[in-house]
Amino acid sequence: MGTVKSAIPGLDELIEGGYVENDIILVTGGPGAGKTTFGVQYLIGGVTNYNEPGILVAMEETPSRIIRDSWRFGWDMEKLISRKKLKIIYANPFKYTKFAKTPENSPVCSIAASKNVGDIFRQIQDAAGEIKARRLFIDSITSLKLSSDADARDIVSELVKNLEYLDCTTLMTSEIYGGQSFSVEEYLSAGVIRLHVFRAGGSRVRAIEILKMRGVKHDDSLHPYDIQEKGIVVHPTETVMNDAVSLFDAVG
Image (cartoon, rainbow, N blue to C red):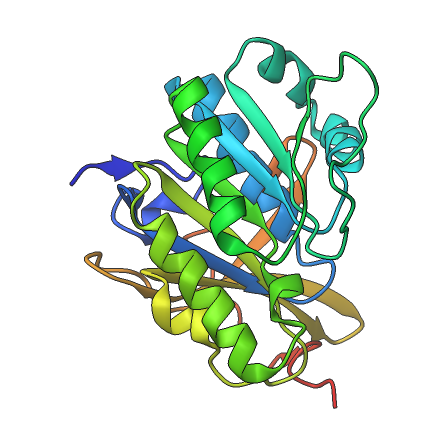
């Protein structure tokens, strides 16, 4: 298997050069940690730096909002869509209209939204074939888990097992609140990256932690990261002290 670059400066140094090709990587963190930025940067960098087309599956934020927010970092997603290097699928699990409406001639691909993971996966599969996608970002799977615990486990397990058949390296995000224990998606994913926001004195410190990365010797320390003008940057030679208090772990 080859290596897929993360497109996050500093991160590949912590995971032996990048993700294992075709693996599924889970990115977790609380609100405001930068999970969506992390995944969109993975897609944009894949296209612009490595000529690897990608798909964004938006399950919560609307495509228009993600496109708008990406301009902050100078990322022209619409241009990449028009060049057939990027495709966006809107799959809000709580929108039950037959077809999601988009403006005429919109470059965004919208799909009928439901909790039927099989239907969503077929849309992803079709889109991957159309643009020969090598990268996939799903943001986020949290909304799939808002049913009973048993149903949520089944839905997430079905999604992950289907994604393993794709010839894509997949990032997916999941929200965490408080000191919750390991979730089913963390067990099923080949890699788990957690984005922390700590309270240290009177300021906030962002830190990245590689909880697991199968087949890769990874760094297990907490390293600071910033959200800068051109996206997320990890500082692999710096560490964050363990006596800082996580804003997420302290909740509840």
